[in-house]
Figure: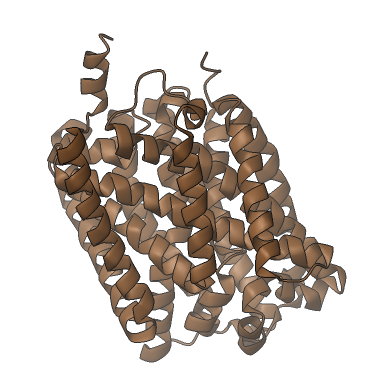
Length: 438
């Protein structure tokens, strides 16, 4: 039996949980290495780009209510074909890589907090444990997840709020003075292409739209509200981090940059304090990823539809999805550093966004969106993707090749799987008709 619907705050909490877990604790040091003192600018640029995508998701999500999220939008605009099927697999992969990012960050902070060594086996054990715990939580349904997210996000924001309020008084103005020459500005732009993934959590609201109260109004509200909250948090934390610690020290402590930045004003307790915040953040991100992302994406890619009674407990009727998701997530965590994982994750999300916005161009009469603004959004996302690919080409070609190998592999898998099973992707209206529901 399906539980009660998620409230506006609970839906927003799920998005805020995964958004903040993606960058502040995981890749802040990577951004500092690329953007330098312009780190706050990189977050602002990422936020502006995210709002351009959010506009499309808000319009589409309020018109087409479906837990299939962006794949529903693409089906409505482009129909069912091999490209749509490939994107369904890529959407699942984006959550797999996100899971590896969050689980890896959780393991690193947890092992540091308890004083254990950073042994790969311990990392793996902690990653498996945190994924298993939140998989079990998902079994109890959407309301249990929403309640857990509310407490987790409140605790996390409290910790980060203390960090910001404490650190504002000790900022060195010289450290936060932006460097606006062309080379440093381009560094901020490159960092923004990677940080773009840190705003992608708002997409999970559309994945859970069937479980949200009054989705026509609350889906857009939750999207815009989550982005506003996260932008304020990100920019404030970036200013405090850069303003209290020289960039060289932030980069040197790349794996735990935020905890290191707390030491100048929180003393010896700073690392422990921020580590606890990291555990809140990455655990909620793992929770939200399993809840709204990997489970639904896997089921959609495999079955081509989401039945009206679809629940998170569907993991247990198709347990191989959970095992494959966890196994691939751990594999990415072991094979790539944090920057590589972030770049792969950002690229896969961007590809899905590109086709979702392209689909929106054909649906603007139904959604009431401004076609010129939708076109501008598509140009912005295409530019971000191109810049990300260029940056990976000049800095880490292994990541560049991995991204395209993944795309081509899923295209081949889709081609073979579709021909072997005859599987077709159905939008929600077609699914409801199939099950005889008005």
